[in-house]
Amino acid sequence: MAQVEESIEVHVPVNTAHDRWTRFESFPKPMGVERIEQRTQTLTHRATSVGGVEREFDAQITERIPDERFARTAVGGEAEQAGVVTSHRLDGTRTEVVLQMDFDPDGPAETVGDKPGLVREQVTGDLEGFEHFLETRGQEAGARRGSV
Image 1 (tube, one colour):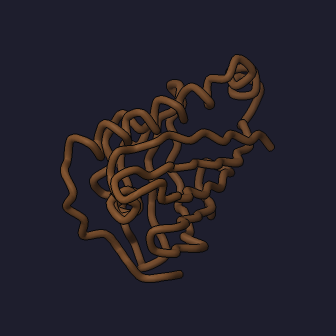
Image 2 (tube, rainbow, N blue to C red):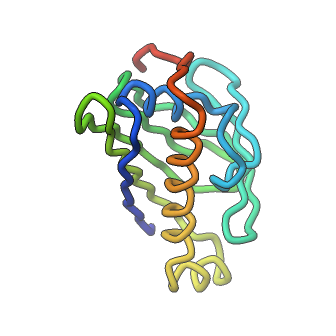
């Protein structure tokens, strides 16, 4: 099992950062996400493309604490992975977003492909894309606010 942890500081309040992360359907394409569909309150279906490898799988939301933490794990399909995003309030207008991911590279091509840090580069690029997405979309929210 491989692990990646990256963080980024965004210039929006913690509630905006967390709310945007939980609005799955509006994720920008540069984040490696082709599509996310909310199936139930705690189940999503994802189509991703990372380093040219396309995957479709369901993900179970295992924890959601508004403005703090969001965790999910793959449950079937073409991926073995889990992830957690934590939002840390730095002050009233800045938030640190930390993404931790565990994943199991599938087969020799993905294992070799990850050695030079391809997944880490994708995660870093994803967080930068998220920062741009946040900072250009304004302060509107509308996310799922309940705890899981």
